[in-house]
Amino acid sequence: MTSNRPIINDRARGHPELDIVRRHCRFLRESQWWSAADLRDYQWRHIKRVYAHVLRHVPLYQDLYEGRSSHLNNWDEFLDLPVLTKDRLMESDGGCHSQRLPPGHHALPVIHTSGSTGQKMEVHPTSVTEQFRAALSIREFEWHGVRPEGSAMVIRALITPDEPNYEALMEGVRAPSWASGYVAGLVNTGPGYFMDVGADVQRQVKFLDAVRPEYLMSNASNLVEMAELWTEDRRSRSRLKLIRTLAETLYDDYRKRIEEAFGVPVYDAYSSAELNSIASECAGCEGLHVQDENVLLEVLREDGTPCEPGEVGRAVLTGLHHYGTPFIRYELGDMVESAEPCSCGRGLALLRHVHGRTFTMIQRPNGSPVLSSALFHVLNELRGLRGVQVRQHGPERFEALVVCSGADAADLSKKIVQAFRGVLWPEVEVEVRVVEALQRSAGGKLERFVRL
Ligand SMILES: [Zn+2]
Image (tube, rainbow, N blue to C red; front, top):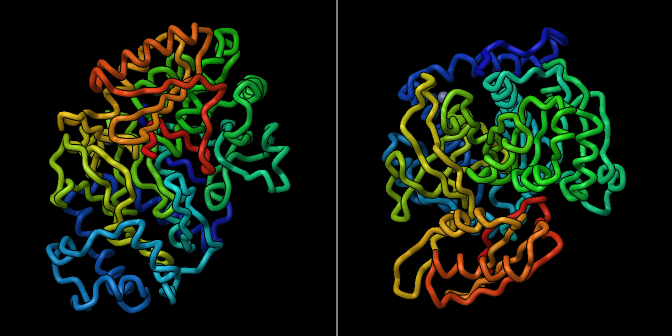
């Protein structure tokens, strides 16, 4: 399945920025096979540079690291730096951005994070972060044997209602290429089809059936909804080869439902607006390779010590090339599970799962904890349950918003209450509300578990 055929073309040689991305692509094709120790050395060189930079040019870090040495001498000094929370970063009121960029880094238009946790944040990308983003995307396509000349459909959060192309993107837009920016300049791409994830699912499925692309990219929860409507008839006409999920956690049950309905493999990638590509699934084995050349990812326990392989912990990230808005030991808010190195031979670190924000411990009244995923495990087995969002209103009070498909709603509600009582505790208070559809957040994400 893995293809290592380089996919970049020779067009536009001599274009200075594309040549930089081309060099990054060559570098990344080699560095993925470096030993973990060599990758660590590479990260260390970049961390030292970023650290020296933030002490000179970023007010937030000047405050945060007051009294510390002006340069890092060893890993212990780095690991002693405080973990930076999103709240602390937001409180800095713009003090988290560089007042000056190093030579060779050019400021690009400011972007905003999707704000699925209720906090919208400004990020200052640069030419360098975008060049790395493009090269990492190209490497990811190579890992999965993507044929860029093929056509691709992208259904994601693209618009807000006040934008001029709102109507068009709700109907579906056809474009000569599915790629943009540096990627479009470096690979020969086939046509692209775009639609907003907020569009009616029936309409999405009709569009997919009409344009018959080879590749499909969308939010995992949206693909699950599409899978429900992907009939045998449609499947027999389809030319799909591969599906990539984005923006949300790809749960095991989601993967199963998507693969069964569409009959093609699905792979997951983990990224954030702040740091771009963080990890991407390995085509040969079970897990996601960390993009070690872009970020240092630490998986930490509650007490701040590092997790062993197999343990789930907090994702704490340091950006290696991010000088516009630097991130050092930044807690993204996601839970991830680290793993032993991959059998494919790449030295890149491996994650078994990205659990996102929904990997939540629920405390039983007797003090014993239970994982929210245990609840979903049981709920997903219920026939006629098309979608569910669990909201926790207090320590002992839950609400389940459910979308039914052809099942008797009263009977299904009874089974949902039974599932809660079986997994959590017998007297747990749960209100089941049948809804037409589950509401996505502004970023097009659909959270399975929400604590209110
Ligand atoms: Zn691998």
